[in-house]
Structures are given as structure tokens and as C-alpha cells.
Image (tube, rainbow, N blue to C red; front, side, top):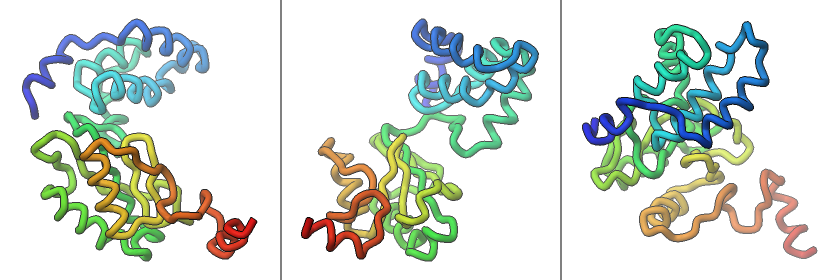
Length: 198
């Protein structure tokens, strides 16, 4: 772990803007059940800490909702969406659950590892990409797909996946959603011809 990145958050406190958001989040829960706000507060902490949650942030979340650190830690370590160490600028979550797997996600994941020269759970030397294998992300109709940061990229093949990674690396504009030209959302392929002629 990068010691500079780690030490930057040793005395974690939520920003003024996030403190305002926290007040609104906590209003959604009964006073005797504030512990239920652990997940949205962890997400907020992770976004403030550049995509990962240091121990100090977990302690602050526990303090705010009056639950022990170990309970916060249990949640943070259970869900794959929470990162407990620094990540790259682009956090690639690769779905390999059944629909994506049946459509070739294993081959795409291998191509991604080879292109980036990293394994799952690692970050590229330039700090741009972190790769993680995850369970279903819920875009099965457009499988195979990946989530990069907060965006979905769907209907992937080796060619458009490598192009996507190249575009991100070179800070080019990328197309979010389906990567099939002419397809809108998750429409059936037979509708694509109709839409072209409309």
C-alpha cells in the first residue's frame, strides 16, 4: 500500500459538503436504528478517500452512528463494492457470473489481464487501472459487461474492450452502456434494423 496515500487519511473527518449529506442520510433512519446507515456512510467515505476506505474512516462512520468499529469493518469486508486499499483512477469490476460467462467473460477477463499486465486485485504501475472480478452486476441482457467506476460498459468483445481501455488510458471520450453501434439500451437485436429505418 502506498504509505503517502495511507497517511493522508490517518485523521479522517468527513468534509463539510459530506457532513451536510450525512445529515440528510441520517434523517432517513429512526434515531434508534442509525446503524442501518452504515452502507451509505461507507460509500460516502470511500468517495471522499479516492475510492477506498481507510480504517480511520470506518472508525468515524462507527462514531457517527454509534456502533463498534468491528461492526463497520464486518460490513466493509463483506461487500465487494467497498475497497480497503487504494485503487487506480479506473476501477474495473469484471462480471463473470453465468450470463456474462456464457457470453465469453472469462476470455475477456484474460485479455484484460494481459493488456493491463496485472492480475485481479492489482493496480497497474501507472496507477490508472485496478482490476477486480465480481458477481452479477445486473446487466445480464447485455452480457458480457464490466463496471468502470460508476459506469456500465456492455456487449463487450475483445476488440471493443481493448479500445475502451485504450481510450480511458489516453483520456479520450468513451461510450457508456452498450458498445454495439445502433443498439439502444437493452433492446432486442431485431429492433435495431427497425430503428435504423425509422
